Length: 82
Image (cartoon, rainbow, N blue to C red; front, side):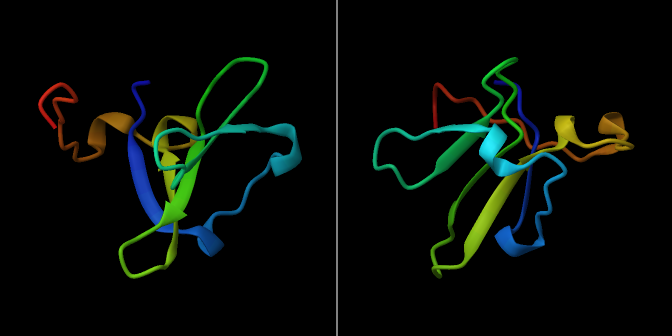
């Protein structure tokens, strides 16, 4: 998907678009809800729980205004090997 995930506590994520306008899917163990725009397909965030049971959100930094994406530290993952 090309997402740049930024992890935050779920209650710290405030949406400008009502969540009711997003579609959701999950797969595998259904532990993560992946939210996306049903019109364009962009994936703004996913949500689940961390190992301690805290609700977390993985925000796609590419959906945030005013963020200099080139300045973000990025950990590259090879999805084929992980």
